[in-house]
Amino acid sequence: MKLATKSGCDYCDIRIQSKTGTSLEVKDGKLKSAVHGKEGGAGIRVLYKGAWGFSATNEVSEDALKNAVEKAVTLSRIASTSVKEKVSLAETQIVKDKVIWKPKKQPEDYDVSQKHKIIKEMESAIHDIENIKTVTTGYSDSKISQHFVNSEGSDIYYEINLIIAQANIVAREGMNVIGYRTRIGGTKGFEIFDEEDPVKKGREAAKSAVRILKAEKSPSGRFPLVADNDLTGVFAHEALGHTSEADLVVSGESVLENQIGKVIASPIVTIVDDSTILGGFGSFPYDDDGVKGSRKVIVKNGVLNDYIHSRETAYRLGMKPNGGARAESYAVRPLVRMSNTIIQGGDMKFEELIEDIKYGIYAKGTSGGQVDPAKGSFQFMAQEAFLIENGEITKPLKNVGFSGMTLDILKNIDALGKDVKLGDPGFCGKGQMVPVGDGGPHTRVKEALVGGM
Image (cartoon, rainbow, N blue to C red; front, side, top):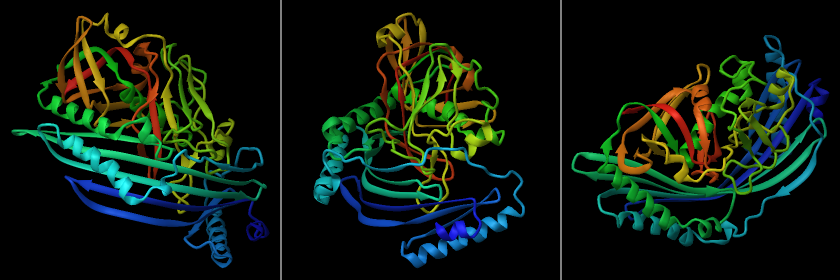
């Protein structure tokens, strides 16, 4: 740190990270891989005359850190000669803190055979269902520690645990083949499997996959649509969340540019990005700018209220940093990223959401999709869906896709359930992979463009 400041740099931070964990994979009853390992290193950022320099090392000795700082300083000096938009950082508190999120049941206290048992029993339960052809289950846990220091005086240490179990299922009947995925995960320990039974979760997923095999093709047209918690969360993350990432806003790649204070959704819609949720897969105590994690209210009663910020984007837009800078590892620079993105709930029961629908769609989860933050458009495939007729769930449907403009859908939300929960955990890719959560209540859209694909 002293070396960077002596070199005339305006700012420097160092992230020293260590990650220890186990990963297992079982395919059709056979253990395919079992890995236990530890990795770590340090990432150094330097700001000189409005330009970043970054260097990383997998060694944390004094000499290795000194060399990495020198490289970062050199790179920042070179970059400063041609930088077009000079970087400045929004002010934030100087923090000295130590945070340890200790799980109730530390994964490192369980041997590999106990971890293997979790996904082996999950895989076996799935295979018990007729028409299931291939099952791949996976388990992963990691204990992550990070020490962040910067030239302003912040000194932050934290430890968190991540755990996930998942199953990828292939069901087949004749020439009809369906893929289905289910996951359990969080910033927790082995207690997560007491809270959510992997065997039950796997069996339910297998039954859903088989049900889709026998389902009818979806009708096409504009219909009322009810999204389950998972699909609501995916929409919040993919369609709204990415457009609210401030790096896209400042680069002119978001439909939400210059929209703060404007109505972008139905007045019943409030959307938050919250890294403080206990056990959330996307939760963390401090971001990689050294800013405390927070509950960011992106949309409040239909009005765009905030963006997700790093210190850099907050300065550019004259706003406050809110803990949105995340890096996949010590080896890369932080980017503006989501954490746990959630649509807040209403006061309706599921039966009330569908009782007035004469002909519509009930869509659950997603098997893929794409979004364009600049245009504000999206397209999703539901993982499972059903027809709604005269207020009742009737027949299962397959290959249900829906698409449209994000802001149109947000304004067409006319009812929200009271059953808010996080959906399945996931990883978000934006050049780097980071763990995220998303969720919400059952959500009713009065009209959506639906197509059988």
